[in-house]
Amino acid sequence: MTLENPRSARVRELARLHQKDARSETGLFLLEGPQAVREALQFRAELIFDLFVTDEASYKHPDIVDMAEAAGIVWETVSIPVVEALADTRTPQGVVAVCRQFPVSLRKIFGDVERPLLVTIVEEVRDPGNLGTIIRASDAAGADAVILSGRSVDLYNPKVVRSTTGSMFHIPIAVGAELSDAVSVCRQAGLWVVAADVSGTDVTEFSLAQRSKPTAWVFGNEARGLSEAALELVDDRVRLPIYGSAESLNVATAASVLLYHSAFVQRGLAGAPDHSGA
Image (tube, rainbow, N blue to C red; front, side):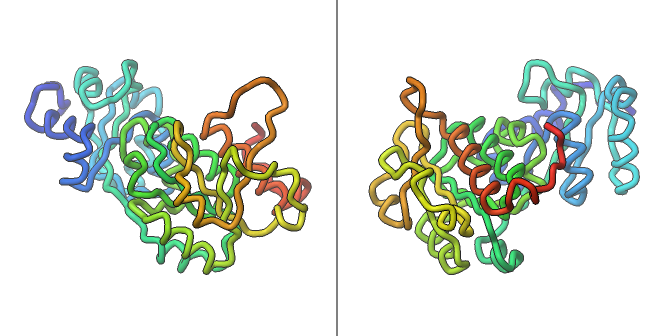
């Protein structure tokens, strides 16, 4: 039977998950689009609570249906208006999942990773697209974990979820951490804790030996950067050189460059596996 009515009580209740209060109350969030759902099915299928697929999408993406059935997940056919009611985009692609949230504690992250090489700490990043991109870049650079302070945008915000393109299911992510605790735990794990800050030393001025150390990068608010109190917590402040006339780099762009810089010097250009061919 097809779920057709976008104004049904069930659909209205699930659509509330666009709101943070509803996500906090239920412990659920919405996952939209075939690629994101595919990643969840492959890496964290146990998190999927409900799966909705339009007729057209089931024919266009038969692998999603096959993966769901292989994982024992009962999927439902829904109308396009129902998907539109659940989706956060104007042009939904016919696949929406309802997932359980999966918070991870700081201690568990470092208990599971014996010798972390690269960790991302995010303090008060408020733009969902920026946070999603930072998580995706952390995943791509091979980071061991991402730590979000309680002042950052909600990990389960639909725009954050969409921007990670499934990377949130690949890498441990701690949420609601105090920056001081995150820095302390990283330092105890032997990481060099470095803030990305325009007042810092040009990253190229550090020795190769220093730059190749296991590193935790701290990225701050889009407009204000990191507070002076936050900067007092770290071991060093580092900036990227600006060779052109740009005033600065977007935080997500800077994070991507710095994370890959660490990945290159830590792993070696020749030894780093190429998974994507990008």
